[in-house]
Length: 128
Image 1 (cartoon, rainbow, N blue to C red):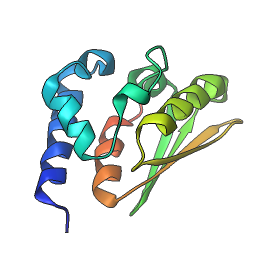
Image 2 (cartoon, rainbow, N blue to C red):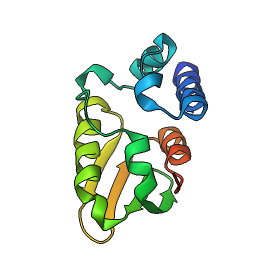
Image 3 (cartoon, rainbow, N blue to C red):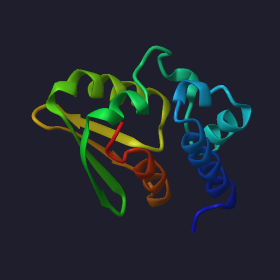
Image 4 (cartoon, rainbow, N blue to C red):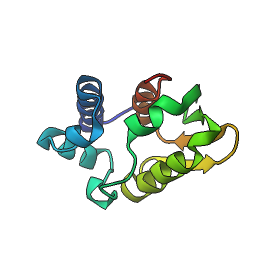
C-alpha cells in the first residue's frame, strides 16, 4: 500500500509534467519541489545543465514495463545524451535506480516501487 503523502506527491509531479512538458520550468514550482522531496528526490543535487526528460524523449524507440522496472530503448545515436541524463538522475533520485547500456539501441532501465515506475512510464512515451 502506498502512503497517502507519497501518492499525493506522485500525483502532483505527474500533473505538473503533463501540464508543462518543460522539466526545467516545472522544477521551479514550490509544490513540485516539495513533492520531489516526499518521493526521495534531491533536485538540487542534479547538475543544472544536465539533460532532462524532454531532451531524451525524442530518441525513444520502445518502452517495456514490468512491475518494478521500466526498460526504455533509445536510438543509438543518443547514447551520450542518455548516459548524461542517467548520471544526473543518479545524483538526485535515490528511490529510482537507473542503469544504462550504450549501443544500438541504447537501453535505460529504471527500477523503483511500482507507483514510481507508473509515473515515469507516463513521461517516457515515444515521441517528440
